[in-house]
Length: 593
Image (cartoon, rainbow, N blue to C red):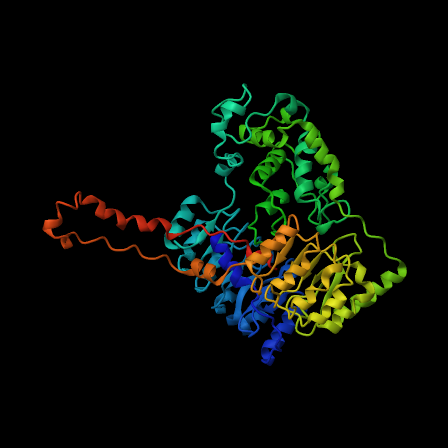
């Protein structure tokens, strides 16, 4: 993960792209690409580098889709072709991408032959080959990419031997091969605190083995006989980590996970969310196992993540047939799974039942249906947004709540355009104004979006003045102020919004002290201040070289009697190497999207 943070920093837009594109040829390329539904956007105000993604048109994107990018290939630093129909032959077009640093090919049909075309991408730092047909033979073609920092090879044909060989050539790269069978054997061993064995003689039941190495110990046979795997184990995990986006009311991707029948029905991809006895093809596990910076990773990176213990339980449930009625005892858990079950159900079924019974309270109340007049108003304003190249659409399937994104209209979307939304203010739940031209005056409109839950203001001209007007946003859970002129004074004005869970203030005037103070005022809030210049320097500066061993001949003979034995002199030569690669794990920058 220490490498992923550097890649994420490179992928972030550093400044607002508020200057018009001067090069007519470049503007023509931008217009042509964005008109297809794909996205080509500058990652800095000077327009020197661009980021391309085909995420919204992946199912239709083929090799020919790369042709319009050719005139500005040298300007593209990030290319996302995940889940597209691009082939090995299509990658030949990447020969001109001399400054490409990030390349997503996950979920494509790319094989070893396609990697031949990546040999010249000497600036590449991140490469994702998850779920491709790449094997060890293909890895050998990547040895010349010496700047590589992160390489993802989950669910490919590579072996440990192939990874070891590549690691020998790319010593600075973090090569991630995903969850292995060896990991399955020890997923719950970390759940217990390290000092636990010392306390066992005084607190553990007499029947518990004193030397049990697993975290949760033995599961009570009475509980195992009564507990229903789905109702008492799986459903609580779904409720805690999934139902807020995939529940009875909100159905992102047409997927619901609040009840057994809905889980088995699946979402837009069909009945593939859970495939009994098939952990490899069950999308639930696939998406949990994706890298946290992958757009398809679930839960989203800014939400509570599935733990290793929970993942082990989900995997066990699917492996054993994904039943909705089988008891824990009948399903015969392995010792490792039993430990996780003991930790989860150790206080008896009453607690698990209470947790499950209380689950519906987490669901947000269903929005009042729109009248015909309101629907007409929404349609009219949506058309106006579309004319501006912005996007106003339902937040999820089967809901009339709306989300606004101005990603393709950022250069001309300002306060006046935002004010057009005021007639339907109460229907808008998410707003993305990143890199737009809005100013503090926009706060007058934003204050009227009383049901707003998520607000992106990164790289805008917003200051503390605007934040003073947000006190009416009582439902706001997420606000991104990255790259704005916000300071400690402005941050304190958010203290009355008790619903806040995430606040991002990278590259602002906010200090860690102010962030900590706000976290103390709002339970459960996390304020992310990013990395300081000193921390970035620490991450990017090579470790100091160990000092040379003292030359033995420098010691005068007369000192031999007072400096014996001579062996300790060799010790300093080896000890400085220990801190060469400190584990630095700052908060993932991928959340700043």
